[in-house]
Length: 359
Image 1 (cartoon, helix red, strand yellow):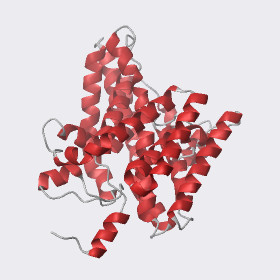
Image 2 (cartoon, rainbow, N blue to C red):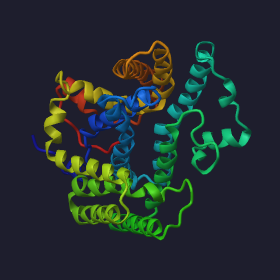
Image 3 (cartoon, rainbow, N blue to C red):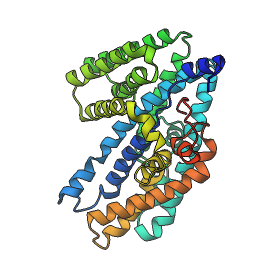
C-alpha cells in the first residue's frame, strides 16, 4: 500500500520511536530497586550475591543516556509546536506522579511507625526544605536525600529539560545540534577546570549527552556526524576524567547503538512470554523508581528482624515494589502519560508499529 506524500513527509520528520528503550529502562530500574532492597542488610557484603546487588546503583547511569535519547526526540518532535508545548508535556509527564510519590512516601512512613519503632522527625522540614523538594531543587540545599533518596536524579533531569527546552529557541535543526555540542563542550571544560557548583547539571551532562549522541546516530540519519561528534566528546571526557558512572553510561549508549538495528524485531515480538515482562517493567519503570524505596525499604526492615537472608530480602522487596508500582502506574502515572505508540500494545493488537517521538 502506498503512503500519501504528506504522510510520508510527516513520517520522515517524526523522530524515531526506539521501542527497546523500554526494556532497557526496566532493567535499569530493577537494578536500582534491588540495590535499595538489600543495601542496609547487615550481611549484604558477606556473599557474592549481595556484593553484585550492591552495584545496582549503576542503573541510574543507564537512565541518563536513555533520557538523553528520549528528550532529544521530544525536542525534535516539538520544534514546530514551540517551547511552551515542550515544557507543558514534560511537566505533565514528570511532575504529577512525582508529587503523588511524595504523598505516598510520607503516608507509608507514618503508617510504618508503629512497626519500625522509628521517628516522624525526618518528615518535619522547614518551609525552605519543602520548597526545595516541591521544586526539585533540593540538590542545591541541605535537604538533599530527604523524603526519598532517589529524587536527586530527578533534580538533574529537571535541569536537563531546561537545557533542552532552550534548544527550541533555535529554529533550525543544525543550529539546535550545534547548541547541544556547545553545551557538551562547555560542560566538559568546566569539569576539567575543577570549577563546580554543587547540584549543577554539568557534572552529569556527559552521561545524558551520550544518549543525545545515540539519538542523532540512529534516530535522525541525516545527523549521524553530529551523533558521532557528541559520542566522541563523551569518550574523550571519560578518558580524561574517568568515573565509573560515566563508563556505565557509555556502555549503555553502546548497547543502545548495538540494539538499534534489531528494534523492529523486538517490537514485533514484545508480547512473547520471555520479552513481555521486560516491556511491562519498562512501562512502569518511572512509577517503580518513584515508590520502590518506601515499599522495598519497609520490606527489608521487616525481614532483617527475623534474620532473613539477602536473597529473600531482594526477591520480596523487588516483587512488592513491582506490584505496588503497577498499581501506582495504573492509578497515578498513566492518566498523565502523553499519548504514544507502545511496542507491547502494537504486538498485542497485531497492527503495524508507528514511528513517533518518545513522550
